[in-house]
Image (tube, rainbow, N blue to C red; front, top):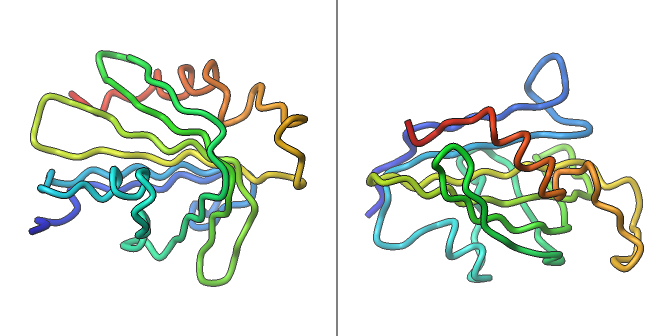
Length: 148
């Protein structure tokens, strides 16, 4: 049984803050349940992480995954290619899906995404400075302290 969302945030690169064009960040925090929505999604069991927000994620290709510790937060991240969409906008995207572990009863996850300009073959894809670059992930998440 799900008890509902505690916090959700959507940050975009547009001044109106309601849509996205180049980059965006979605953060979600909810009470932990016996079945983790984000873990099911990342395990390929389907579903949509952003259905409460009327956004859709389609993950086509897993580029890599790893773990980090930032500000005492244990973060497992997955860099993927796919698509981010709303009811009227869809864009090919490079995205980093993250689970953030804290010592409490809440499930936290985030998606940091950016428009992928062209269908670049994986072997030629340069993610330096992008949302999939570990250095950029560390810098960006260094500002967040969600476990406090």
